[in-house]
Image (cartoon, rainbow, N blue to C red; front, side, top):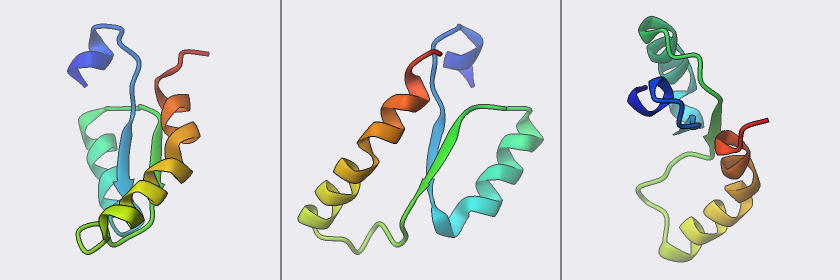
Length: 68
């Protein structure tokens, strides 16, 4: 939120398991930022699985921070 207030574009990323909680938290804080959700779980993934997940999400992540 601090970066957002300073005019630095951004958003937030969470895993699908936490979608409802992430949205509720953002709403309660008044943080209406772009968001995206990735597959769950995260912590048990291998390095290769994490690379694959990151690569598949890359375009969406970039879109979060690029101003229209």
